[in-house]
Length: 150
Image 1 (tube, rainbow, N blue to C red):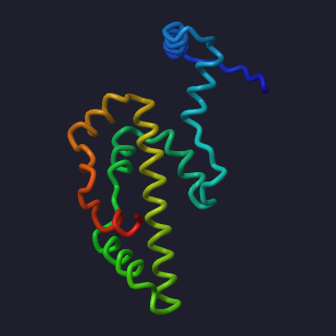
Image 2: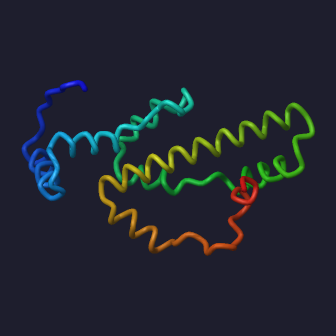
Image 3: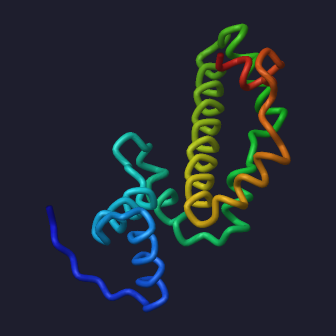
């Protein structure tokens, strides 16, 4: 275990102290859990996305909500489904499919990171969106991307 000394603004130190008292846990344990939730593990993240995922920590809520709501264009979704269903007909089509899958993966990583950060900052906002726009019922058509990936 590494020991680190940091200076916190008084208001933040009070909030962390209040959280520690509320859950009856040591301050160090609460801070460790908070940092663990905010600092992403980059072990399985593509090299070209590592910096962006860490920098998202400093994005404002509006930008995070935009990332959390991002979707692949309907055109790209349809093309990915087409290539996935029929199989690529050429090396160029295979490269196109790989690029579409990579773009889909990047969108998904950004969405996951943005949602995690928003929930840490204020779960109320994320819950309000989830309640207003619930996921589809089981058995419903998940759309072209979901269908292609299932």
